[in-house]
Image (tube, rainbow, N blue to C red):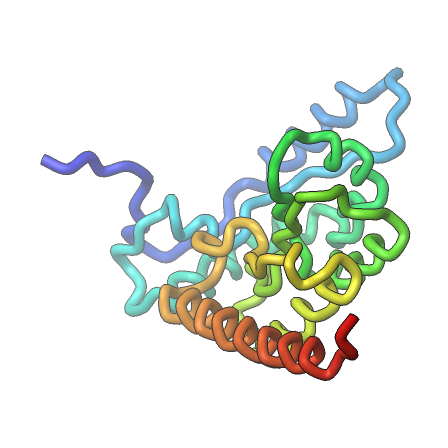
Length: 211
């Protein structure tokens, strides 16, 4: 018999965690009292992540289920500040580059990180290392246009060299987008964007004067 994990939604979803979230906030503030910290933050699961652990046996479609979760969680989301405090890549790059790996995979397509390709203008990628920037994201169900994907690949190739870039995805893509069809559409865009970028890079090389 297969092992079944997770919980099941068998009726309308409603948020009942008001007291619990306030207690969590109070506990965090109490734990930090007397300790020097720059700031505190708390996170909450996104609706698409929750669908991975909560199985729908009530709503007519996966879309209805997803929006019901979002509506129910809206109150908790509004208890925390806006998502503005991601750690800038340039602040941790010196640590990242000390890791003994052949490639570095990182978020690069979210609105908080899309600009960070410029960091590599100032910091040299070590020899024989590869960058795997995420060029499609989990932060939205919108499907990235292949030309946007290509643009993101080309930006990294322009600063570290085409041979040092592999197009990747932002973390959590499989569990955070709304439906499987959206997931595969994003991958199709990734593939087509990669083809566009490869053609442009090959064309640029063919136009370069030989040495």
